[in-house]
Image 1 (cartoon, rainbow over the protein chains, first blue to last red):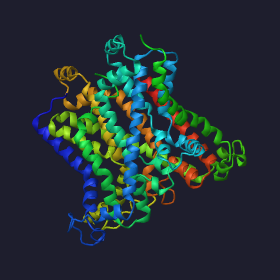
Image 2 (image 1 turned 180 degrees about the vertical axis):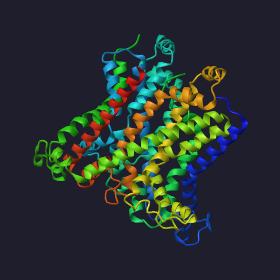
Image 3 (image 1 turned 90 degrees about the horizontal axis):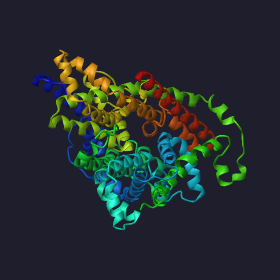
Image 4 (image 1 turned 180 degrees about the horizontal axis):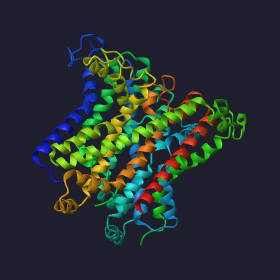
Length: 273
Length: 293
């Protein structure tokens, strides 16, 4: 990279530090507000830190506002979305290591689905799920976004880089194709499983559009949908809203900071090694 | 010996789901867009009738739909260049620094991208609060004797406010794509340029930025598609208001489909959006090709 002297480096460091601080101010503000009372937030005299740290906002969310139900639903949906991860891995493996009739065409079809925006499929998918009676079910919420073309593509890229010999050896020992996939291919793919697993978790935890459309019964709402309701029903209770937002955001931030090493390297689109 | 059937077993579940939830719906949407499908039709299919192009001829004269296109274009025209400029600048600055502190900054800049959009929209609604006691931004401006600004209540400013949030969220992932591309520029190119007496600016302009061409193309296409589908921010923060100043095409479709239950009409809008996305992508591919000649 370009050589920079110490002084320039310091200037760049300061610019980035200020810019970075501005980037995360909203999170700090959210966390501080979540532990204040609403009266303190709307008061004329403002303190940066809460006068008295309170957990009241969180207890209101969970004891009076069904956030316990939303939380369980979100966990169930996140767990179910991991099925999609295995389906993607399986398809990616087949596209990378087998020759079969129609392979090129089918793979192109998979890639083409990346272009289709959710807004176009939203209405027909709702009608389909409604027709087969899957509205207001966990399955209905999870199914539309279970597999992803991009996920299949990334798994294919990864498996292409693994030598065929690994799998041949297992086959010579008489292993079935399923054994080859589950016991040889999957263990070899831990790096990409880690990245995709984290992204699946984040995607499931954050899922909003399908729960919003498919669930019209409160019993199936996820945290995102519940949070969006807060804005309508408790519009002036800022403390409560920030507590809800903090509960959604903080776990993800913690996981992200802990696992950043895996996530930050997962975006090389050029496929260079 | 490799089994002939195994690959089909492996791809079947994923492909079946893509077929049912991505590909068939496109054709269904096309079909629905020529009907007057509504809530009544949903309960009893015999009450759905074909109305030909009527949905399309109505929608292109619908003032709200036209407004939503104008707003979406505004976001594309201003949002895309800003996202590219900021994410590329940050990626280059981080690369120039190249030590622990600078790597940590990547985590900082990426954090908005992974957080829940509804939560983040609520946080920004709070920051944008019009009161000088409650809204952080107006508190800050009050120090300088400016404001209060109606971030989400003023029809001229609301679009910009949502834009700020969306740019803030979009920087992270695009910065990572640029960062990955920066890693693959060989050091020898810079060394050669330095021997020829090129200064730092010249090296950035003549080597770094041209080498980022492919990733810039990728970021432009994905960012345009992203803005065309702009939905959660206006849905949560303004519901498209005030006076439709922040309504997007995606929100228009959602509102007509799921709040007004005009499925046929909404499907017509969604297909127009799909065509716009295809055209935007093809134009980008075209430009990229001309550039490479």
